[in-house]
Image (cartoon, rainbow over all chains, first blue to last red):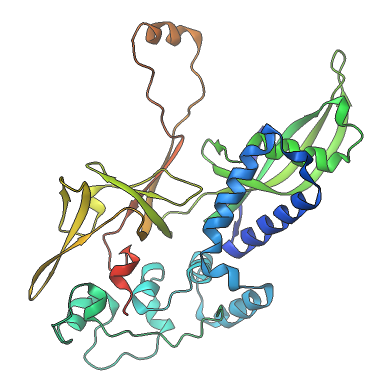
Length: 153
Length: 204
């Protein structure tokens, strides 16, 4: 066996989800004659992967949504990896966005005066009331970026 | 998380399967060979994506089966460096936090890549992040079953093919079996804001 190209294309979670659901349908239709030991590995991996992917935002996506998303993101000059991670994770907070995007500032509107950005969360926490500060999330204000993330449920 | 890998292989179809469509037989053989297996330096193979080219099938003397050279593309799990993934904590040990994705289990977050300062609670066998605010330190436990967001910082492939007879003689004298090594492991890190248990960063 020879590997011609170990990285010929990146697949989004949605594409893999589609592929595995189609495969499952096909195998169900072809009847129960495939339940021999050779197919056990395929069954295991497709079941586990489908279980994992179904919990991610991709189950609400469709080809039209993905196309709309890519056309909307054209103006932002993102790398392939950044667009893929946005599509797969659908970040809702500034903290999540800055994890996968180097130039996250271009994605967000002008910051409020006095707030230095998600990289400096301690400055944000010190302004909040201290009574319920059990976790980092309690101390911050739930700031959601108005980036229109098209993959809405 | 998933990549498409182009591969070439020769598939053997035994004579009793000649009545089936060639494409179906080949797809089944390829899935039987590669699904849920790790290919060295490539990743964990999931399932066949498509067959791009089928060359002529040959029958060799002495073997009634047909051999076909197939060019195909396979869906492989191979996260790129610095990718963010979400998994479940499988358990904690002094080596670090073990994370699982359901279909892939060998992910380790070593102690130095945890949110600092972190300590290992021996009594409960969990890692704890000592999160400090003005009022004092809160202990945030990394319990089993919790969802965790981490960044992939390293991967390692180990060739687990069986060794030849000369080295087998030397090792057979020892009593215990050689340790089973995972062929593909990922090393993660959660030492950045936004990484770690999902419950730490979601505001109610």
